[in-house]
Image (cartoon, rainbow, N blue to C red; front, side, top):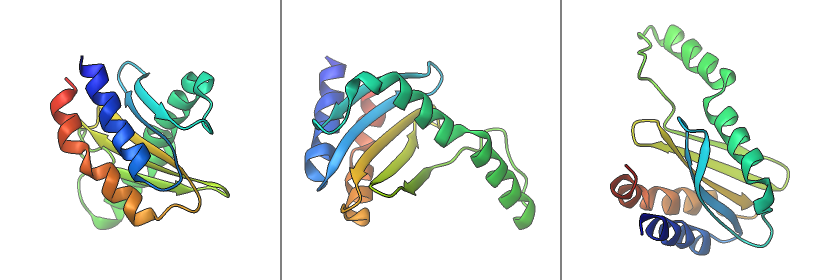
Length: 137
C-alpha cells in the first residue's frame, strides 16, 4: 500500500517537471532503491547502478571532504550527525537533483534533461517532502 502511495508521489514530480526523466527514493542504510518512477528515456534495468552512483555521489568522500573544509574555514565544529541537505549537478545533457530526508537516511532524487527549469524542478521536488516524510518509516 505504501509503495503505491510513494509511486504516486514520485509520479506527481515526474509529470510536473518539464523534461523529467526519473524520480526515486533510495534507502541509504540498505543501499537500495525503494521506488523509481521514470519515463521511457530512463533505463530501469540500470536501477542498481543508479542506486550505487547516487549514494556515492551524495554521500561519497568528496562531499564529506567539502563539508569538513567548509566547517574548518567557517570555524564551526562538524558534528557526527551533519549530512548534506540538497545537492545538484549539471552534466552536458542532464541535471541531477538530490535531497536527503528522514534525517539523512533517505535520498529523494530527480533526473531531468538539460532544458528543465532548475527552479521549478527544486520546487516540485521539495513539495513532496512532507508527504514522503510521513509515508517512509
